[in-house]
Image (cartoon, rainbow, N blue to C red; front, side, top):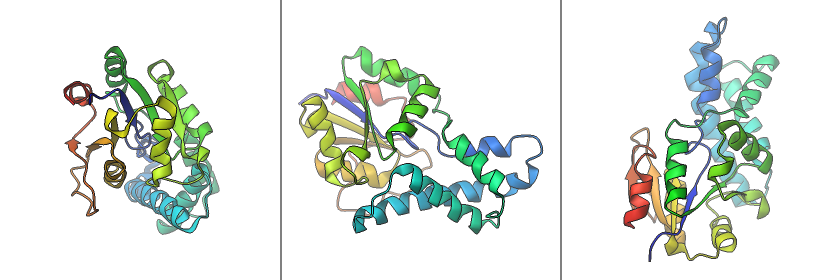
Length: 229
């Protein structure tokens, strides 16, 4: 069954989550912060993800903006920076302006030229996703921006993946799902999607019951893959 619909995770897949701390570290006068930037960025992302899983398991849902703030607060404390409230607010503001990876516009445009449905399916809150898409000027390249807030639980809960079929009237086998998160690509594969893990860091495969059918180092060849499947 040919692919009719291409679905992308947002954070880490289309938008570079490390760009907030990196951008701040590169600003003049931020030499002290630059010493902590890599660790803080890694801790922030890890805790952000861990908190989504814990909230999904326990039924204690909060939107992704709350989880993002909680993850940053942990990361700041872990780096000995928790008393710097100006730094906290600056990093949070930069998170609303994350940079898209350079290949993103061309990839989405190529998929649209093929006649595919193209959408985001993300843990992000609607307001966060709207801001990221607007900043990257991707509105005309997306048919839908789907947020987990409509079901009140984070990925990889299957009710999140079910949003795709409800929105586009397609079967799982008609969907190519693309994520930079190995656990997300695996969960989507378990749901029945054709999946791509965008493994930019060269990480090992997550040890889960399902594995992504395809692994790429970036998004560049996703349109070629969508045509072949």
